[in-house]
Image (cartoon, rainbow, N blue to C red; front, top):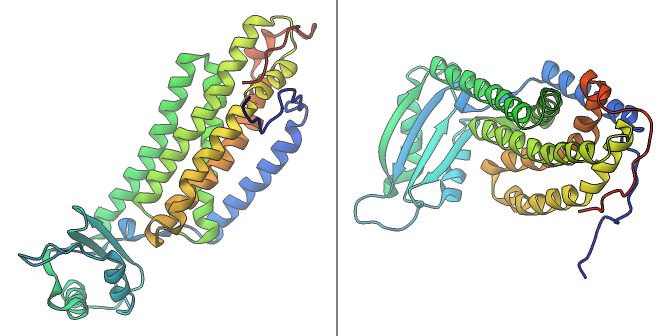
Length: 314
């Protein structure tokens, strides 16, 4: 007999408590918006420009590059934010330095300091300056990619279910992405291309949870045609509650180690963990409850009857 963390007979009134859930949601949204206006996003060098330097070991040396050692040497140069990323099986490292205000010949001075710090242990394969125009285009591309992802999610859900489900899904997913962006503003984490990847992953995970709940609601609407919509939503969410929480928990456990993998992945992991929490919350309390305010869904569920033979929890 398997262990069940969520009892089989849960009968929580999710629909009836939606106003409290909406109030909590509104408070979080308010904090997010205020943080974005007051603090803004701490844009990383991917979006602000700067100098990019690619280094590798000299010919004949096969020893992998220690990214921690390179990062430690960069921290003492007074460059501010420095991005250090390894690739090619730790045989090469990409160093990104943010723009240096009040510095003429920025590229030459940055490279000179890096050469002095690293010595002869590395060779410089590429040096280039990333201007504000290019970094601005990257930021715009990131925003467009996120918006397109949310839009395509809405189209997918609308085709798989009905347009009302698509509307509810895009609102819930947009809510989750906004909360993810808010995390970067509140904590002052660097917002870069890795952050955009985290937001896209967050959106995909969120809609996966939402689709599971919607699928059960659609199935129960066919089976219990006389059941009032609020009761039908409660039944459907309670049935999928165990699956939703266990899936979210196991995913979170897989992401937790990334929090301790260094500064580069901390923001990514923090966003994913926050997204799992918010995505689980929105799929249970927000997405399903929104169906109560869509006329066609409401009209198709009569107010009389309670339905019998409720499904067992999965």
